[in-house]
Length: 197
Image: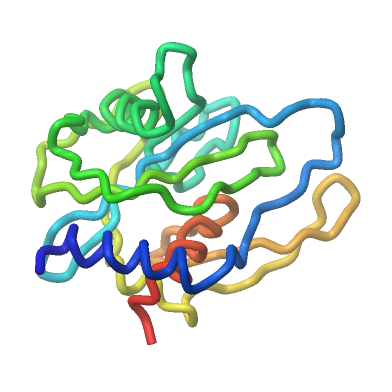
């Protein structure tokens, strides 16, 4: 069975087997609907699969310097979250949409900054000549899928935000700090896929 077929089957089984375990933060600012957004979770088809992640420029207005999946808000011209995620991945890292085998959607995630994010899981070929968008992306890198999905690497941290203590996930890989919404979406995915013991 191919990686894509295995992931598709695991995601479908996980959707039937378990409820959502991490739903994101509920915004306290009532009255403002969340902004729809989508990210691509690009899983690289290698003997030991990896996930492509980006490091945002430190000068970005929102989430400067953070590790994230390629993605962003859903534009009016996007037909659906998948189209938005593929468009953003092409813009941010030069990933051609036709090379992404879309597996399906993972659980919606609501961020404290007002976005409702749909993660689109896709499989991509190895060693594509990706290129970081100079105005948004400082670096593109791959991290091992099994490492990211391993629960013992998914550490719960606490911090004060807007006068209230909040919990968030953090995954450290080779000195890179993956945290917040990106880490939470990885944790959600790990619990859906159950590729770890």
